[in-house]
Amino acid sequence: INKFQDRSIAVWDMTSPKEITLRRVLVGHRAAVNVVDFDEKYIVSASGDRTIKVWSTSSCEFIRTLNGHKRGIACLQYRDRLVVSGSSDNSIRLWDIECGACLRVLEGHEELVRCIRFDSKRIVSGAYDGKIKVWDLVAALDPRAQPNSLCIKTLNVSCKNANLAISLIFPFF
Image (cartoon, rainbow, N blue to C red; front, side, top):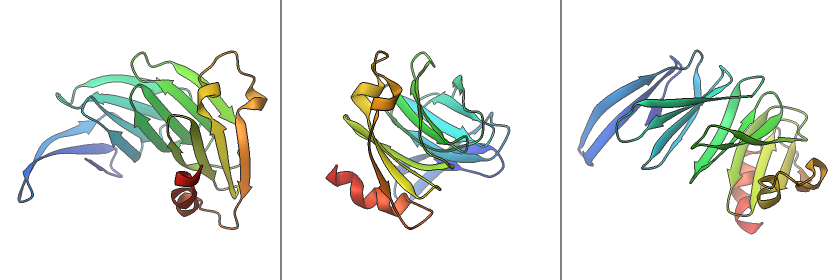
């Protein structure tokens, strides 16, 4: 799957390392596609148009739009029923992909959230504010949890782009 600055997503079939054919081009975003993630059920794309689009992997048919971010979306990760997205509105949103509901908004970064990774216990986010934040995913999915209890740790990094730092530290948390 490729993302393009022209707002489209190319879906390819790879029957062998030498045989790759274009299956379909997905169109629906109104701005450049910034990130795509997928599994055998869904293709999930995020864009500068402030939306996340969900498509069927098998049929490439459009399923739904996730709306809520106030500015463009820079990063996301999708696994099982959960999508976690980061935006230039400085927030992180947790979504239920099956119904399209926003389950939680995490706030605490002061600039664009550029990278996101999560596992079964925590979310790690990096932003242009030079901070990496570790969030309690289990608590974030509990609607009774207080917002001020969700950030477990904040790390200050000297670089503005925390992608590499998250890649290096994520396995250790």
